[in-house]
Length: 353
Image (cartoon, rainbow, N blue to C red; front, top):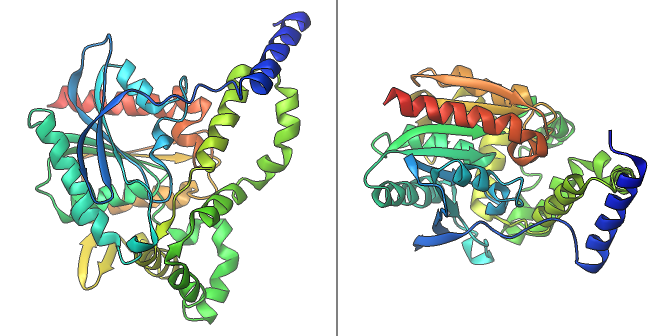
């Protein structure tokens, strides 16, 4: 047990760090080099220092609206850092800022252009090897749809973390459903059309609202843990992440609203994109699915539903881990749960080749 004097000294040091140095979190991004770029696509290869690269490439796929720093939250709690330090050949696709001029971009843009081009480039850059996709939230849905729709892409496996497919299983949206049904789905349509999508400030506020109890008690929690630098660093890193949210393009937001939220198409395993049917039963690669035990945006039932729908995949693993929507990906406990599941899954795929 840490003695009271030691705790007091640690708390004093942390206060100095926060007041005089702007914080205690190390928010430096992991070193990387740009290997490809296009509309809504910057592809980076993470650089390695001392440890040699081994195994096939891993491509990190973020969702829309969330910055790619979700995979590189802070030093000491960065999934990218973990992969790099483990000697894996890691890549990251970053969609960048979404502007009003992007309002006509639909889901097709991401699954026809952005991700396929990134996947092919990663494979080419890694000597023609198949690519393991590691994705979070909507990034997991896009990754599954890409593989189902384009089975010729060099994809070795998919990991989907906190990716909901059954939107009726999300309690926080249940109160809005009667109003949506009453207006025949047109409740939000005029709003996202007027703004060209969902503005970044609104996305950030909605994301914060899902953890409103933590936001309210955060000052007390900080005072109680003033001697815990890792705890304080995590709060700073999450705040930094929240303040850098992006907007949703208008047409993409409309498709997500009408196809996924309102009619819940994906829960039945299929999505209709202007007459083009994409079925999750067409996924043909091993898949790891991870749900957060305290996730209000993508609770376990909404995530676990996909396991039944991936009946064409050679293997589907389902795991749960502590944390909310961001926490299951890169919370402090994710280091010993989600990241361990991912390591085991990737190692098993490598040994099976």
